[in-house]
Length: 241
Image: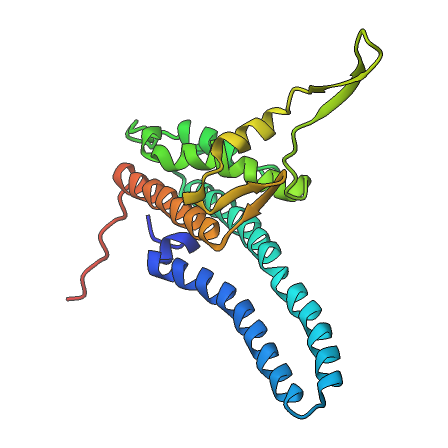
């Protein structure tokens, strides 16, 4: 199948470079701001210097506070991009008459893409081998999907819930409330080497997480397109004589 899908066209170096450039731009903006303040400070008396430095420190902190929010936004966008790639692949399968099942316009997510591919059988009865999705698919479906949903719906809050009840002595006693299934999956999935960590019940997304997700997603898309090439190879182009 022709590599018309975004993630297939990207190399691992492209992905690493993209994530690095975005994060480096924020740090560069902070460095430029600091240099600008330093030049102004050199032209002031001591009292004005202190006032400007205090004011600029607050602005610098606000600027760098954007980093985790930018990484969250990048991860959400990357996940949406991955699901859009899946949808476009399935549409291409339908357009090339490799399937008679049209792709629904709304609500077509990772689960629907798997069902669609799993049911695919080409004219020669060669079925799509769902095993090619591999560990990358499981990592996304059982981990990154929950992370994405948490960022979108719960503003990165993954808290343990507790309640206080009166015990026999009439004193408040704290009990841990059963966590939602999503929170359990996130706690199980989060690892430093993924660029994800929990700080005070907040899910922190580092640049490494965006890179890791995109590389995993690219691997899944590449596996799918290779399998489609196997069961429905592209015809050889006519040679010009």
